[in-house]
Image (cartoon, rainbow, N blue to C red):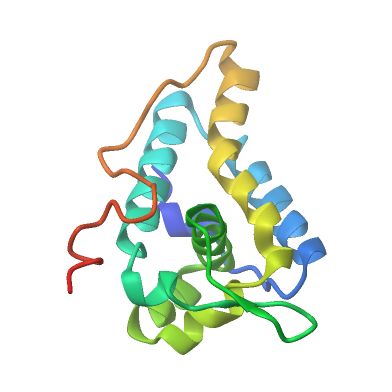
Length: 151
């Protein structure tokens, strides 16, 4: 199995176009994996999403172009976590150390990063003609990491 973070790689993500390009690169790497490794990649993704599911990151407001600040929804927080992971291991580790490192992912233009959730299942179905099925022992929903949301 290729390491989860090796498949993600290091992707500069400053715009929606960057997100789509990064998703294309990751998708290309996934096509080189066998069925077992695609499942392991999905498990690694759910573990990474769970690990970064933390209250202090979810409480960073979304700042719109007009300066209006809105709270993140649970969906927006999931997309921001996907964008952070898509950027690579260094950005992920930095976000775990400092909320200011995560704040750059809390922007509406990164919503396309949600597609990271569907890459491995899509590749699996195209390659093997069946659904991958549910994988991972870590839930990806916001507020599922009790330790990350503890007071």
